[in-house]
Amino acid sequence: MIFGYLDPGSGSLILQAVIGGLTGIGVAYKAYRAKRGLGKVDPGSEQDGDEEKAGDAALPAES
Amino acid sequence: MSTPVPGSFRDPASRVVFDGDKVTRLLDERGVEGWRALSRTEFFRKAVADGRLIESVEVDPPDGSAGALIHPRLDLITYPYEWTFSMLRDAALLQLDLLEEALSAGLTIKDATPYNIQFVDGRPRFIDIGSFETYRKGEPWIGYRQFTRQFLFPLMLRAWVGVPFQPWLRGDLEGLTPAQMSKLLAGRKRFNTSALLHVRAQARMESRMGDRAVRKDLSEAGFNADLILANVRKLRNLVGSLSWEEGEQGWSTYGECSHVARDRTAKSEFLETALKRFAPRRVVDLGANDGHFSRIAAANGALAIAIDSYEPVLDEVYRTSAGTSLAVALTDLANPSPSQGWASQERASLMERARPDLILAFGVIHHLIYGASIPPGEVVRWLSTFGCPVVLEFVSPSDEMVSKLVGNKLPHELHPGGEESEFRAILDKLFVTSDEHVLSSATRVLFALEPR
Image (cartoon, rainbow over the protein chains, first blue to last red):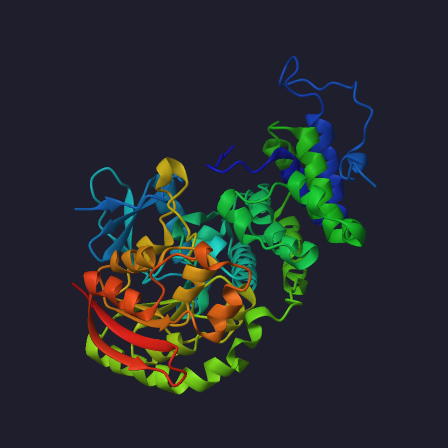
């Protein structure tokens, strides 16, 4: 991986896939699921306790 | 002897030093790789030719660097908190256009900050060649968040909320966060599709994702350059659609004021004489308003820096300055841009950058004296600190404009030194009067002054 000097913001990186269109929504969904719960126990493992979907995550908190 | 540029330290791959009148960019191995990839493209050649990218020549690097470039030194550096709305929008469009063209050439721009753009002859020019690097398959646009914080949200703030962005950008050099922008949006704009995505969804995603590493996951999920291009094109449409019109009249009708029309010819002639006498290369026009006198200075071969605090008029000056040596800077003279940022040196004060050979102060010092309550002696002392000739307009307390400015003040609330005889005594301590002219109203006197 190449890391820059700039903090790109994890949420912003996934969001820009959503903005990219239908294909990007699929990419964001996959990446978001891959990242759920990462870092709590083992950075290499996935956890399934989070029932939220990427589509929900891309929506604003307020309405 | 090279001097590091205080604002150039964040990118380890590329930093800039002043070397006399030259600007040298020192590159590490990654920086050299990015430069070589960029310099081979047709996109680079065209963007330099049309003035959107700064000229760059590769030279032998000094010890400790893998590569070095020489750039021309720009006459003036301004910061986004000194730009008008149209300037920030033009800079944003340039940033997006260059990114789109770079991606089409197999490159990307790794950041997205307006500090990488400067205005030369009234047009935006991208100056940070070190920002270009080869696009690696699967990588997202690293600068997206920075673009929204420093370009998009400030423009939205003005266009959609009606609040000037400059104080915010001056107060926080990183710009507005998505969460801040989300709280500032009100009414129907909150439900605008672009607001939902770039502002509210980004704020929500930031809150939810924290700082978890996701670049590898995005790459493995199939992220590609087409997604960046789609985002960039949508952002371009959005930025291009943002506009702002000042509702109130204020100084936008300045040129129609009776004293302005009456005195303009005499003041223009006085300035022309002073320009011939002092032959300045850099004229700083304090309280430039509609830029009439700055244009005269520019037409006489000087770099004219038009400074004013009223954005609607200065924005119009910018929009009519393309192709001229007239630069604009929005700032309040009673509180001009300070030195700030890291070690209080990252961003220099406006007056350090302006470096005038001649100060022009027509129709302005009475606003400092009677509007901002700065003592006349302090105003003159400040003008003398530049160590250059000053062309100024003295306005007597009996002038109709001063009467308006002091309408709500009692005599004892005004500083002494405002009467013409008192003001002349203050001037005589610090300046020699080379020329003077009493305007037809008899309440205003023009002075051409040289420092003692």
